[in-house]
Amino acid sequence: MKLSKRRSALLAAGLSGALLLSACGGGDDGGSGGGGGGEGSTGGTFSVYIGEPENPLVPGNTTESEGDQVISSLWTGLVRYTEEGEVDYSGVAESIESEDNTTWTVTLKDGWTFHDGTPVDAQSFVDAWNYTAYSPNAQGAASYLSRIQGYDDLQAPVDAEGNATGEPAAQQMSGLAVVDEQTFTVTLSSPFSNFPAITGYNSFHPLPDSFFEDPEAFGTRPIGNGPFQAEEDFVPGQGITLTRYEDYAGEDAAQADSVEYNVYADVSTAYTDVQAGNLDIVDVIPPDVIESAEGEFGDRFIRTESSQITYLSFPTYDQRFADPRVRQAFSMAVDREAISEAIFQGTRAPADSFIPPVIDGYREGSCTYCTLDPDEANRLLDEAGFDRSRPVDLWFNSGAGHDAWMEAVGNQIRENLGLEYTLQGNLDFAEYLPLLEARGATGPFRYGWSFDYPAADSYLTPLFTAASLAPAGSNYSFYTNPEVDELIAQGDQAETPEAGIEDYQAAEDIVAEDMPMAPMFFTEIQSVTSENVSGVRLDLFQRIVTSEVTVNS
Image: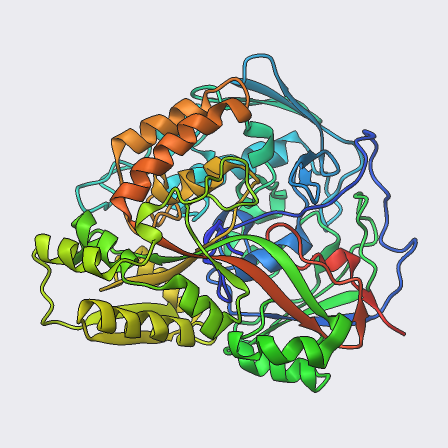
């Protein structure tokens, strides 16, 4: 998900957005689940820090971390994931099967309902996917559905500037068909062996009939099928309180009576509130408190291995950064190790690839331009004819603890390239992403990404393909290369996900040469909690698993 690809997904406090799904164990027993939030629950209320979500709370338009955290409490997808990243059929799907990796049959479990009591059936998935894919609806996660046959017919024709010049040819994808209440089929435009894994992402969540009656009102008080429900409106700048859904059909029924999502403009304020006992959970604490937090919080200081990569991304649409040699030079001018030690106390590992070590397909050192080399950086910058007389704007979202490390990047660019810089960190997260979508960044910008499903292509397809250009996707650098698209397509069409890795790595090699985004850090997440809660865990997508949180008596 945007920062994407916790988010996404971009993160407000470490990820762009991106998104992003629950890692949850559980057996594939084909039943309707544990049922009911009441049995075994412990009650009580706990509170969670979030930044301001970019959009109203609709799954198909939520590709960043802050909204995704709330969506993960309100919805359960077709599949979930184990803590090892494997597909787990503890969600709504009984099975997702295909004989040719092109036509898939999705069979749903009985007993699942939306929070308004209406059934979660095949039509609720098909209608939701068609709505998300239809370009006039401007849903930010639409591109994840682009592999479905007929997706292109739902896209309006556009001019050279990307403005719509007419209506789409259709409103429903030809590749979707309802068989009966519990079964539907999905025909892809070409084989994709990893299709079951991607169906856990937000784009693939179901929507009740009430959504289509008033999408705007729905986004303020959403109706999902997850362990918590919304019985009040989301208030911008404040947040929302969700309550346990007593008729939840899943195996991960909520332990607490309710969860309060509190919006903060600055994560440092949220951290102070946890210290004072006025807030229960901060998922990603500010870098400047990492060293002291472990001693202060003890076993309430939580370290989580992360699938997240932090990037210094480049506006390839800006003539100043259109030459790959410029982008290579900037990447080679940054001492990632020094920033990790000085700012993050060694909790951020210098990134050396576009696929992180937690994913099959990672290759140590695949990013050759991620190594500090000021001499080569200056040679490349001179060769490209870069104008050093103008300062460089460095963009990042405010209030999420990015100031120190982005300033450190600026200082190294000044020292190693002789360039002055200006920090552009005054926009909060809800303002920052629209700026990137509108091609408003005038220099390198902070971007974070975590997988939307645990696979190598989840780090490539959403960020570096033409189909994923913003605003319909998470490609905020606006980079395209037909060779990359072709290699990723070849990887998608491999007989198994494992067989496609070689093609994905070949695509990564081209991206690493073009350098539209410079990998900076592989991230470990540090979280803290108050004494009020126990059982706090972050899943593979860096989301708090709110259903597991216990409120201490």
